[in-house]
Length: 463
Image (cartoon, rainbow, N blue to C red; front, side):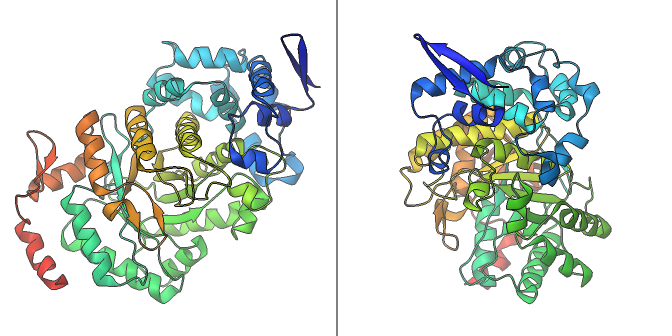
């Protein structure tokens, strides 16, 4: 069954739901690279209008990637909650947009609806929404997770303290950790991208982070972003692993290029649970995603990159993650060309993830060869703060010296918290106050007030 829409006497036809979804996507370089994007603004508008008339039920009968060929499709279909879906099952994509913007879409009703939505439904409705629509609906939704603290509560925004170092030097990493903590960063986690994936190096980093967290009694969690199989190997050796990391995407073939499958992710999840290291809860998986990852692996099956990204969130939610991070501008301008495309993609990812019940954060970032700058990141940061994002990145000076990309700094988190009235995770906030880092009266860090006594010895050791 094809789809069509007429504009100014010209009829546009789309041969499949997959083609319609691709042509309805807001313009981005990755879809042009894949040769599936709309050929003109007129065709894009026609596709969006045709998509608005598609019944939501259609997505349950027409898989964009065949059930028999893809385990992610099988996961989506087999885990669909028909009872939860019944609330909106009579609606078209356009009618669903109206419902989401209306008063019936409350925090409670959206939480109940999440298991009844497929990623393709979320992606479809996002394609016909304005930026303000994506912000308005996302801020209604709260996805709360717990490990050693509580992330995702209304009025809160957490940060991942990212103390990367090009040689994994412990002193350099420790200096960045201390710097971030003094700026009130690190409640989502302290997470290192290691320069090497060797088990011995990963073990040393994990032990160091565990020692810092235990010594200073910090209510947070650590993560070394190694392959999930390396985390399993470390757990089997008795290494103190808090969060289990893996990059994921929305198709079986793309995940296979990462060396993973749903079974391998399940093994990592169960290994993490076996340690029982959480004190408040057992959400322990940390996933990273990004639009364009399936296309870069030539494993997108002709599906547009934003829909592939939304499908990754179905993989994520299956494992009850603590955090999911869309590293929105990291892959490069081949997939998101400029600041406008990065901003739109970040808001889409956050909206789709939250709608599907996933605890979304965003690495608000760009590579140095993209047509973007820090002003663009300031805009996305502000919009995501208003939209209720669970967490962002905190990196010294916004410049990751190991991964060589631009992101958000410790200061950027302070800006967002101060401007929008957001606060750290409650347990972490209490620790910051007790450590004399945070002033409770105005929710600001005590810049210029000196180093808290407990940190002075650590600082002296770094000199």
